[in-house]
Image 1 (cartoon, rainbow, N blue to C red):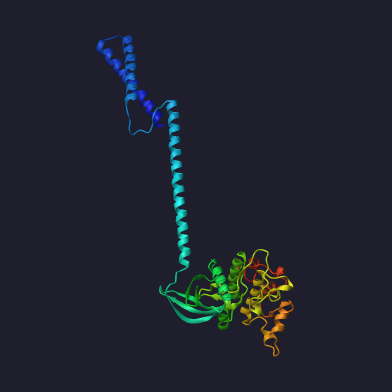
Image 2 (cartoon, one colour; image 1 turned 60 degrees about the horizontal axis):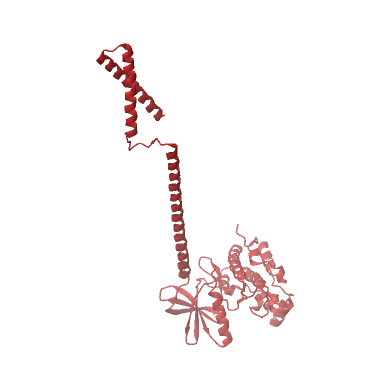
Length: 384
């Protein structure tokens, strides 16, 4: 629109100037009408030439409008495209470089985070006795840097025990899960080995339920965390073999973690374990009597979990009603468990969901038991 107005004004100026120029020449020469008209046309031509010459030689540095030929326009478009493409390539290179830097920085931060989770303990003091674990006593430790941790003190009685401890350390050092107690390192002084572990302030679940009766909501929350820990272990082809409240620790914030891996074992896919290991009243029938089904795998932990949930809700160990009998025979109890002829008693006063959860875990045939992952969908533990 602006260009059209400029064109109209320009032509109007040419006409006015031409008339005036022709009139002046006519008067100056006292010419006739035809001569004056001719002079006007001549003046029009002269003014048009002057104006055209001025357009060709006038530079307007502040103008954004240029008159170019078709060939020049094509060249400019090509050049613009090349420049834009170059800018895009440079931008892509910059973004790629920035992404590379960010990725590298993130990896370094993750490494730093991983390292910061496992502090180095050099100088420390031994504190109160906390309990007993497999192969040794557990104490509170206090580091020179000012943080607390748990110390398992082990005095080797044989080469076998040394080998089992080394296996436990090898497993612990590989685990990285929020529901498994964290390993910090070891220290050997003379014939004593100290294993440094994460300290959970509220101790084990058996101490907790002896102090506080646990409600369904609390047991549900703890069981859900135990299942997450078990699912992690089973995905690594690791069987714990000693799941019970005494081996499950709790922090002040309600965080629950599996502990004491002295009996844990890595099993190859498809293989079955045949050794008698665990705490009898929490052991699955196939663990007590491996010959009955040819051995056992990770489903043995599911049976022990059912016993553990029952333990939390009743505040009693499994088979406590039989143990309390006057003529209780421990060997007879173990034989009956191994044959699958005796299951722990599940009281009727427990909620329907909790009873069903325990029953699912206590299937005599290990193939009939759900996995840890499947149990996470059970109504008793499923988050609403």
